[in-house]
Amino acid sequence: MRNNELKKRIISSIILIPVIFFFVIKGSLLFTLLLIIIFLISYFEWHQMSKNRPYYIPGFIFLFFSFYSIYQLRIYEENSLKKFLIILIICILTDLGGYIFGKTLKGPKLISYSPNKTFAGLVGSYLFPICLVPFLNYINQISENEKMITFFFVIIISTVSQVGDIIISYFKRKSNIKDTGKLIPGHGGLLDRIDGMVFAFPFGYLIMSNNLFTIF
Image (tube, rainbow, N blue to C red; front, side, top):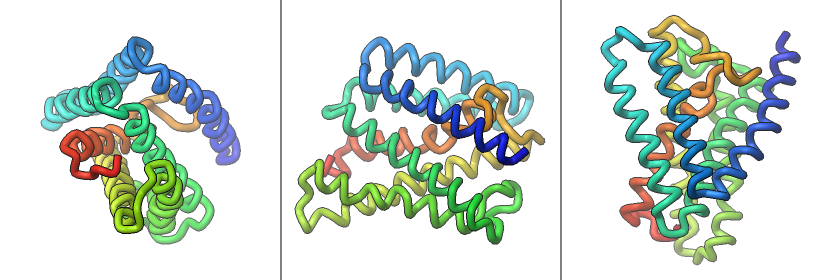
């Protein structure tokens, strides 16, 4: 059963990731259309899991702010594509590292209400995106004095992504569900896959739009 789920997860990722990157790179109307569709699906999943609960409205407001930030970052920011891809890839590597290390090494659980999250997964969630640092330093022509800035940026975005994942897991537990939906084979719902990004993108947007990390 686990091998079957893993195969579904791999096949879904192989199909979805190139499609997402295509729309992101194209930008403009295609990206806006994709963003609206993803927002509506995410809102529907949030509605299904949290309706009639006190955190329903705050969650919806945060979702709206998150997707607005994503839109602003990709459409209106200077060097928008590069900035967007940096955050996106950090989130993907964070999720991938956590999944591979967690499934391979297993070990002690990180939190009680999410049995799939382990301390080994936490290590992988940091190790994979950290491997991106030398590449970012190269493409941004970072000086020796600024290299640690890139490192801290990657750590911050990765941390926020992981915290977002944990927060959504908490609300799933409160709602007595395992997944937010069944849209993506092997992954669950759409919100299951973008939970970290929903938090990481607005945080990254606030950092970049206020020039807190001028290297980008």
